[in-house]
Length: 334
Image (cartoon, rainbow, N blue to C red; front, side, top):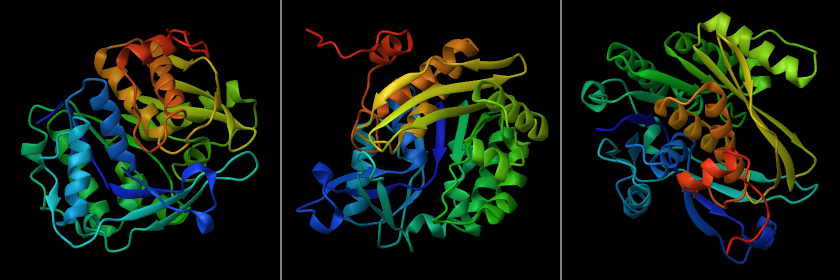
């Protein structure tokens, strides 16, 4: 089917325009989003053949969502149809000291009805190189968690590289339940993407008190040792407000840590930046980039997404190569 397979939920995204409060919004901007779908779109934008696996409502909203994914070059042939609704999430963008707010309406979405045996993973993974999922999918229910394990076993049996982004969502489950469900899945994972807090509170890494340059690699080393990960990627953010942040990445391997340059960013949309980072990392590793080049490229993808509204990044390979190489800036191109 494709080189990279992503499994997860995709939802309708309704965003308040022009920094209005939700209570005053004259209309809402329509889009689609979801961690694994966002990663699939980023990979497809960079020219990687990518397939998304899920279950979508068999109605006009489901058709619109499939059409949007296809328009970004994502293979949706393994998406199953059923149920009557598409999960929705509402976004009220923040600014300065006012944080962005997300409200979910995702109960009874068809993906929550997924059960082992519903997907022919042997066929889906035929000829593929990589499988990606995140902690959001197992959080959707016991059936989805079981499907993630089933997919991981099939991917491992067929020799695929498996990546996992923790992506903890407090509105879906607490950290104790997340640890209970996710820790058994870590035995299948080759490349782990995690935030600092998630690494410690969910995946069991040792907590460190040192400054960032020492602390982040130490946490990643603890994760790699504990779960036998081949690579651990982490993002480092320092946000003064909802409008401004600094952003850099770190990739830990057996040879030690590799930090990217630090990007100063005026935020347009924070949502989906981690998924763009993950897509950029998978792309670079598949391409055979060195660890230093891979983390620079992944971080450039995440940094660029901060400037794009909606969940899905819109960027060319040439633009990311330039940003990863240090060519970013505010000068008008003409």
